[in-house]
Image (tube, rainbow, N blue to C red; front, side, top):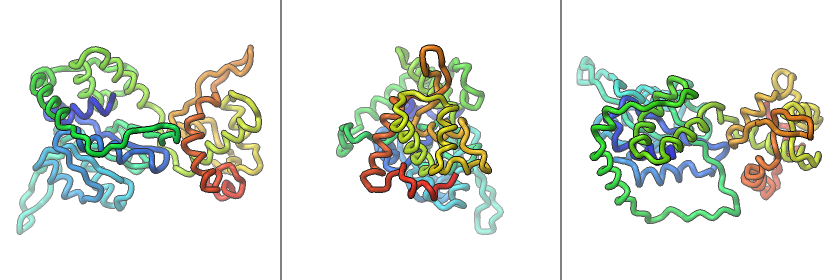
Length: 342
């Protein structure tokens, strides 16, 4: 839902006040982030795909070509250059976004470049970006495909018809897009309402169930941080699988799970947080990248509590732990866990 509306937004962004940055992340590598950019590159308006550019290239391309910028492997860009790029990304979120440089032979001429425009980037860790840039992003969290899932490969797919339709639809609705205001969900914060506004305008113009689909998607994506260190998050999954396998339970309260993790002598969690152990909030944050969150579960006939059901982990166990086992590097073996940091 988000990516479909953002794709149309790349044809209409000049009519808008804001343009959200789409940050495509995943708990680990090989979850399809680059493939998302492959699809977007064929659909968006005037795509500019890059994986290694300087800030000077970025603001000059934005000003001259007015493209939809697609940045792959953002976290592999050297930190100094990455910070400079992020500075342009966050300022280019609003139509007033400008970059100023001193140029000319004598370096006395101040030149202004427009940094406004649609941008999408792919990286593993959202914390690669500073907080101000993250607050201007819509975070699309990818998950690894299960081995049983069959997905058609993207090869010679011609998207020109979809592009023509986007151009025509935007042209037909130009006045409405430019003048429309969208009623936003109260659950979204002020900054979140800013970045989602152009998508809600498009959803309302599309009609049907698009407004409700977008609202549900926005509320699902906003809230918990899904940025967890790759090895730590997968390691925690392994220990949770061990808990369910050994206990035989199909549900567990957050409090009981944390107690088990901290009391397990061959696990590293007791040493975390200055030997205070892992917390319920720590577990929640680490699992958020897998789209697993604590909810009210019934533990027995008379007791309910915030916690987890085993079935919620099935996809994550299959997608992330099976690979570890196949490589004879199981995340649940003490010899591999002992060296893991908190």
